[in-house]
Image 1 (cartoon, helix red, strand yellow):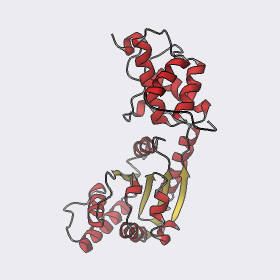
Image 2: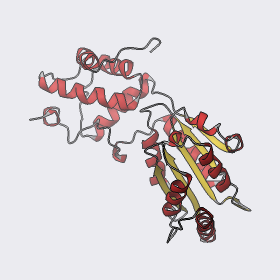
Image 3: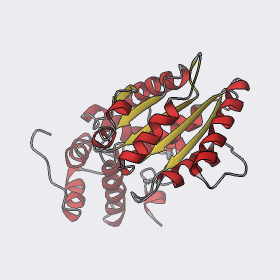
Image 4: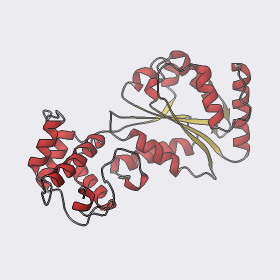
Length: 275
């Protein structure tokens, strides 16, 4: 027996792996999606979503990619995994994501191939969209200048390509490396931590999706989860997953505040002032 069977759950409710079935459409996430999709639909060019570690930026990027209609958009998601990339590498990735065949090696022909592909997409009645996750790692003035150059490509209805940057607060500094690009940000939204009410709804939502029909977490335990997690979804998941394990190991019928405090202590989590 494990905690799933013990608490009558069909699957783990608090895994940090991205699973759209568990997506919690909070008020701020819904608003963020509306704003970003508005920027794309009106071909504004550049939209930016900023948030702290674990606030759900990657989840939102995947959600947006899934919600962009394939009949109306040629869309792709590019995840930046290190900060040592070159402009040539980035342009090649963008070209491949947009469907350029036989990607050229030299930069001049590469830019020409991207432009021709964007024209093809536009003439097919679609909008080209590239979502870039962990965009704060593109910490290079040269790379920012390349994005500005791509955003110079226009048709009468707007930009030939839309970029949506998802990144941590440092992304503001990265954009500042090229002031003309920063001034071209058409839509910007900043994700915040969950309120206590949102944390409670988030926990209830994920437990319900996992098959739980009972209130396993007491109100006091939810309050403690919120305080120790500071309303950050990734930490909420980690705390709740471990409290369910602890509850099973100690054969508790539900999760109370003391279990949350024990788990928080194990992870070295403390309550911040003002929470």
